[in-house]
Image 1 (tube, rainbow, N blue to C red):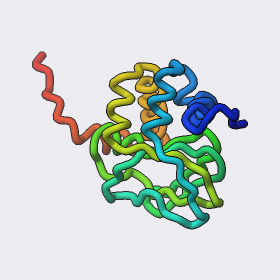
Image 2: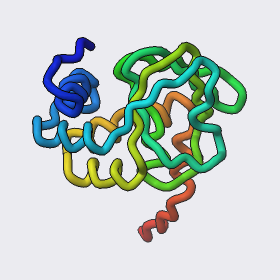
Image 3: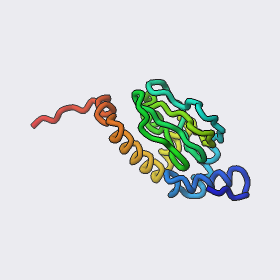
Image 4: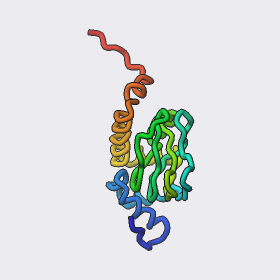
Length: 157
């Protein structure tokens, strides 16, 4: 991702346009996203989320890498353009994985409130987040565990 020298928020909006989950956002919505996100530098080894504990942020990796661990097992390495924290953002649940920066990283972080506003406002982002969330739940074997929390009445025949 090559930042364009058009001011800090404009540069962030351009950078976010290259992140798959935001690629279909309008320029207006990208500016909203950029204004709602905080740029952070993360040293290697810093834990960003811990499985089972409350997570109150959504993250996008701009540069660097982060390791995803579920039940003590490394399951994935996230890199440029990947995001995490979306499951907790959607349902207030504890983090489904521990995510730790495995290299010094440049990321963007968004609060729970701003994330909820974004997915309510931008259908393309909502659809992209839901698609990735479903894939991750399926890959991790957490789908049935996740769905158990919803009480669906049995249909009468």
